[in-house]
Length: 321
Image (cartoon, rainbow, N blue to C red; front, side, top):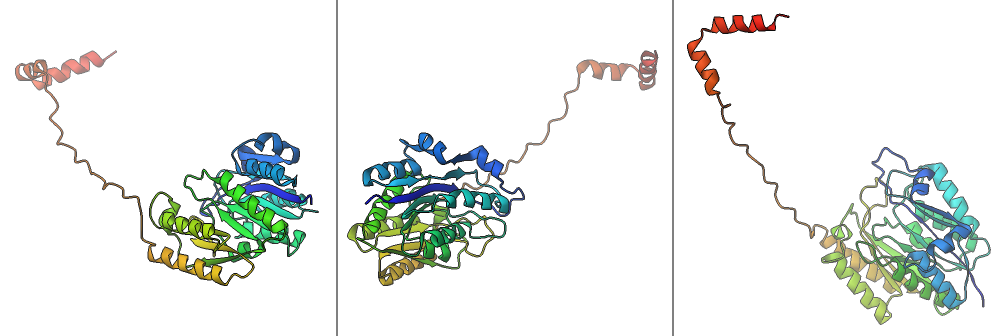
């Protein structure tokens, strides 16, 4: 069967403390591609959308690719910009059997703290309750219950710097193919704690973030979970759903998935003070006492042999024009 799949991306990380709002011009300065502009720019690249195009060829999908938009991290996205991005993106969802999309996970819009959750809720309303929706995320996403409820699977990148989007989209594509063929029914659960930040700010070289990612991959390999995603969150956003999270995607029954997610978040809480960065203490520089200004031998000789009054009189005479 030839499935029609929605793909595309909307990426922005919002610092709500910034006084400069993010507008459509910021997306145009970053990347804003519509419809037929996308294939020549993304096909054949090791990017999220590059992987989506390759997967479509492998699995025989017809892709709907209405929008690829990203902007440099900045202030809250204006309402007008958010609604325009949603309009472009969701226009391509009509008639689709599923979705394989790339979102950041920490976008905030005016009047909408959970921008990605709202996008996914609108997409779910269009595609229906049973259509598989697979989403890749930045590991600094502030993941919400609304996102987990409306996505079939949430797959966060596992490297910082983020160099594995291509691999994560391929992981999602294989899962989406299985779901479309009825082999699995992916469902996602989420666990969080009252933490503004943790998991070493998402550093993936050592520490609790690395440990949880490795444990999650072992669970995926064993078949105990379809996907385990660990996100460190983004603390420069003054929103309700801030902070680290663990989402686990299971086939149908999510009882064990919930236990895994809670266990992982317990460890994130226990290690919340861990940091792999230890700046050197600042070395304060104590300036040396200033040396007396050198005295000219000639000036000393004049001062010793000529009365001060005569010197001043000479200065006044020389200054008269």
